[in-house]
Length: 276
Image 1 (cartoon, rainbow, N blue to C red):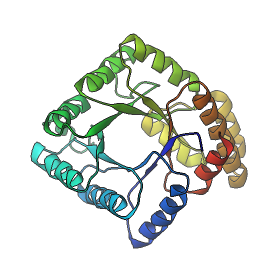
Image 2: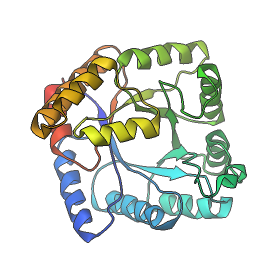
Image 3: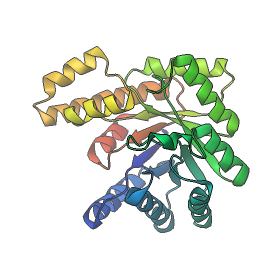
């Protein structure tokens, strides 16, 4: 395949889910992704599951593995222990994120790394050999004051040492290309990989867009409403939309594609088959 792409999974919560995820990863490995990544939960079991599973993917497959890592709520020693572990396992790329501020403990925002650029700087200075990725928001971070403020914050992450970025998912490619143009005006020239979220479930995509601040264009929202009681038609439509979006992004200069798989195989595989 001439196209390049990467895949994001969330860590399995039990043995049955883990077995299924290994099967999913095996199927995707045949398509030679640039890398796969495992999402990270700040604190608790999700964090340890992410670290453990990320290391196992690196150990047990030939796939390049990117480690998600959030800084909110953790101190330097806790984060260094994880980074040391990744370093020992031969993982060379970190996706450095602030993470969501827990609603029950908003004071954690004032911790040792209150924002992602501080965390990026820490990694770059302490672990110069790591390649560092960061998040980007073509439709503006939901907590940003405005678009200009969001661009300034993004540039801080780049200036702190980020090597590449992956965007939040979006559905109007105009937002991505306008964001790229604005970044160039700010002297931001790192690769910015567009994030793609295949639509397979009406309730799920509505919930995710609300959580992430992404917008459903009117035409898309209307069609999804019409198909909400027909899951087969909904999935086929979602695949068609994502395939067209992906092809347009590649045709117009996107460096790669990053798929939020939701640990599901069929939709993303069908999308890959439809783009060139």
